Image 1 (cartoon, rainbow, N blue to C red):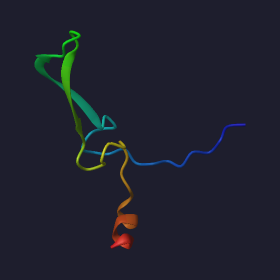
Image 2 (image 1 turned 180 degrees about the horizontal axis):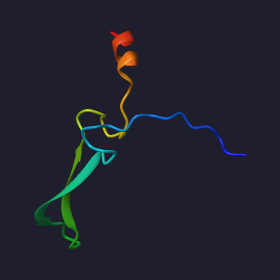
Image 3 (image 1 turned 90 degrees about the vertical axis):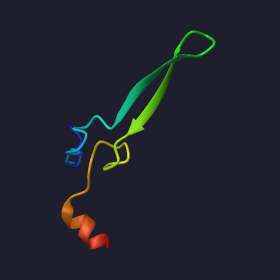
Image 4 (image 1 turned 45 degrees about the vertical axis):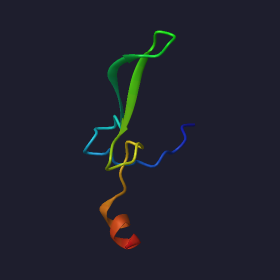
Length: 59
């Protein structure tokens, strides 16, 4: 029997891709690239947002 998972809205700013890795062009001593991780400012890296009613009630 399938389990129920609450339907959470996807973040409209990042389209559920909340973290991006950007290369700086530099390399570590072992040869791997130096990466910067950038997180979506709207959802703080979760990929989902809260419904507007929940946000208003929290204020």
